[in-house]
Image 1 (cartoon, rainbow, N blue to C red):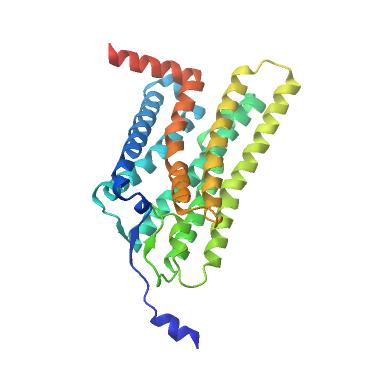
Image 2: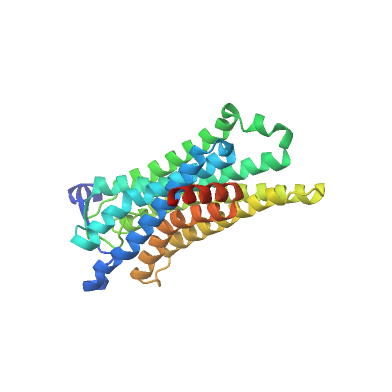
Length: 312
């Protein structure tokens, strides 16, 4: 008896962001940190990518993976920040359901790509330190694709599933999203029916991507450090590179899990959830290239030379 009634319920096809509505007249000032994040991310990541591409000495798997991470880090601000600026400066806060789902896909797919790239970096360090004689064989393109393709397929399948299920939800009560971007739970919580399957699939995606990658990365670095300690050889450079990756991993995982848990903690106010999600989305794109630029000696030297030549 319930199905005919359910079919007659109209679902909202247009949504409004209200992530900054509590600020009132101060809303426009939010554009300042957005612009700072945008330009820092754009400059730092572009510079790192340029240095890796222009310097032949950096055309090795580790540096190419770092450049790929910078590209992914740069894409998210380019996609989202112009839309956020329109929101806070001109009150252009509306978005269609299809546009929201597309935005959701890019937001979460970029996050899975970051996690996957960190796993590839861990594999690169594992082969470089624990299997140095066969490093080039393992990191050759045909063999490396065996690691790349399955993980990318996993990322696409999980995110597409999440987005499709979100698109099937009936949004018949409210069309106001308590956020500034179309995150999965920010949209799905507006559903007027049961969204348990959406929450479950979202949780499954976190475990199959973020948690799985983190466990593999942790296992790789445990093996790496055990190998270094057992060999007794001087591997300060290799360990230094590993520590750099670990710093980035800890920062990224902290932001991802904090943002994920914030939507499952009813005691957290809406302003707090929005703030956490903004940090999760944009701060890593600013911090990661700085960490790699400062802690990776070869990249730091070439960045310094590039900046020095431009100022002369």
